[in-house]
Length: 243
Length: 384
Image (cartoon, rainbow over all chains, first blue to last red; front, side):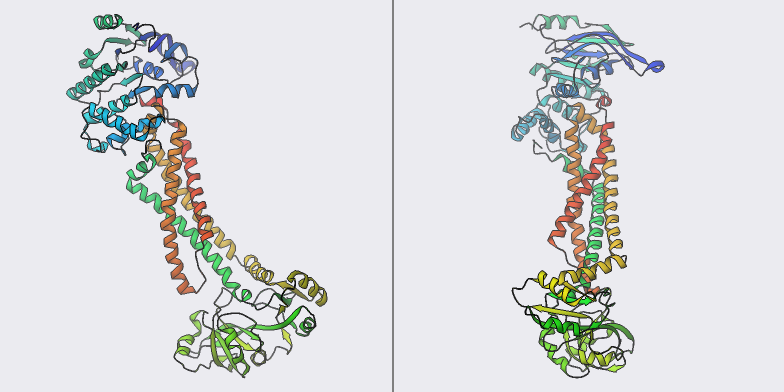
């Protein structure tokens, strides 16, 4: 198996700026990165360093300005809105706040993702959603409305939602920031073990130092520049060997 | 939706108070539209019950005839000419004029419509009339419309008890001989029927042989339209020969043009529509605004703009249905109550229900379409 032959994310020379003319503020400077299948990568850096902007570019939520970026085979520097939508359907998202639909139960919040996959029947969608919620330890909370779940439980529902439709990539934005340290740690460990189990790559933006150890690799950003490409070298080497 | 999760409905009923407010808005709007349309229809319908009951196929009126209480008499000799036609079975004459009714219980005077009719053949097919028309042959007797407004005294009640009723009509004592059903309209509170001879006694100023409406009974199989053309040519331009439907139209177009009734009720209907429209728009607009973060999340996860548009339009449709049903039920109750009080023929018709239902759905969908424009401001990049 040659893990490096087809990177999940491959970008180089990415520049990005908000505003025009006098007000133009460049956020990303000549950013390049590669993420391999099955890799868990943490993107850290102080706030305002541009990490969330990079994440939204990779997610296909912003239009590329300069440079090249290919995610899951979609060349984002030359693409259409419809293509971006299709890319996003292959990605599992986890947000800072859980962003669950408050009028649905835990189960419905997970199952609703299959509305994007018409080939999955309601019965199958339900079964897979139940299974995924059992995996995150919420098998006994299936019918709970979101308002009756704790913060950690909500974020675990969000994890289940992100993973249920077998995404080829998981993007997470500060998934622990709304949680206390213990709960945050638990949720991320769960996410890590599920990702490893199903061989899903994760790119996670965080500045929570307590969860850095779940990563195969940590990238830091400073003022729009990537400063460290491979902090967690042993883990990286392991992946490159195809382990 | 594919997964059997009724997203739109679950979202709609999540906030009960907002749902209640939206449904109330639609309900009020639907009730209002029912009332306006129903009253307009009923007022117009009540104005032509008499016309619709005429026992013939063609009507002859003076060319300056305006409506039932503003007629122009013409000589009945014109009608004799029609009797000679092979196509005609009989020609009946009606004389009519408003008169004064003096309430026998409290002495109050009220205006009432008086019809002078032939006593051999019933000229109208109103309930009770054909069976009792021969009673009118005696002098100073009349038949009374018990469906008229109750301002003429407790005539029907007294009649039921077998009391004799002899009120003063145009200062002449007359005797009640029977009850018929016609009904009040907005021009006429009540009606009585008398013979031509008694009519002349009540209205001494009327010249004998002057009538207001001629009713022509055609031989079966004769073409109404060709007979109409033929008779019009025969009688000249002093009178008009009309079919029953045309006669009804003359009456209706008078009330439509000479009174603001049509405009008032049409405007009321439009007001009802806009109340619903604005309430639903406000609710849906705030609803979309409040849900923007959720919609942005869904869009970020790959749900299309079209999916969210359908979500909002489904809610519009659900609001339309939830408001239409109670709105129609309330209107039905009000109809029943008003029928009782005003004696107007207020009824719900299936066709009108379908029409109003479509209007209600349109109203809600249109509000939904406008509210959806707010969706464009949902930027999925902002969820990070």
